Length: 508
Image (cartoon, rainbow, N blue to C red):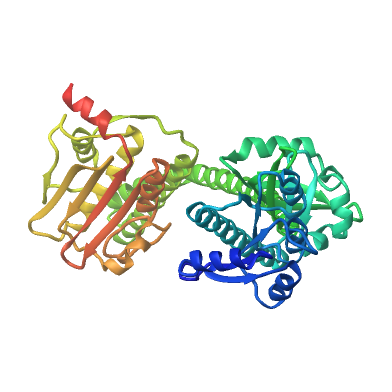
């Protein structure tokens, strides 16, 4: 409407006044004049205008009577009344019945009247804009698939849309005739949550329970926005409602299913743990009971070897030595099984362990041939790890024994142990230049009785590295193996997170 000329209708029974009005304002406005209320009404039937100005004293129909008709039939037009000082009752009547924007006393001043017309047009434009906005809002309000309601802070509903009627199973008339407490379950608690969740003019995601026509609860999420005030001063709110009953039912069903699943998993876990404990006890008992007869066989085989040597019986000596060797291997296997079984039940006692000193003890106490190997170890007091000392000793015993075993074919064997801090973790590496292995099979190394080399070439029980893996798991750490055939192997131990304490120890 910015480029639209203001359309003005001026009504007066005196031709001189009409002529003067046209002369004064035809350049500023789109002016039309009529000499009676009857002819003006006929004109308005076909030509809407922005501003209607009427003289009060006219034959047949006064200005206030004419403007009262205009108010009813063309309410969007702004209305002005021209009158004399003696027509105060006519002004009152025009205000009450004609809803005039202003009145102008005669004789009128062109500048003042122009200003009044422009002000009246602004009122007309604001009314038009408000009406357009109201129509747009009404279209959205009525067409929305989600329920929308207008209610005030006293609990009175002012309007609802079709979706709201369908949600509650009641007509608009029924909903508007009763208080909102008839449809909201536990209204006081809902109002309390609304106040607690309100931010500025809006309360978002307010969960509430509504009651439909059959008394069934309907779970909803609502967003309430303060949009103004009622004539009696109550806050007026727009409520946008979303029915989430189906989601709630699905959520409850999922919770029940999860609870039942947790119970079943807990029961199965307990059963499995019991079975594992029984198996562990059985394995320990079998291994423990086997050790005594195996030691007897070993002792007897040693005695037979001596007797065969005295008699010079070569065949008896060879058979006795084979029995002795087999019993030694079985005793080593039983001992490894017992250590493996004890690891599960053993509690970790953490402390600071000197890797350099512990590695030297392991090498000194091993029964394996070690003269062929050169060792590179951390100096005592320089490399620490926060762990269970006894368990770390088992780990190093196994790794160093493996390194000695798989480097014995080397003319110049080298075995190295190093310690480093990476982030919060402590890393221990045991490296050798032995026969190595195929790196693609590294994961097989840590399984029970898994071997990558034939027992005829390199003896062993197949339990040592499984024991290393189990001990590192108990520490919350890990072990990784890397190898290259005929070029050696590296075993990396990761102990989690105690660098700060290690540093204090080193500093002391």
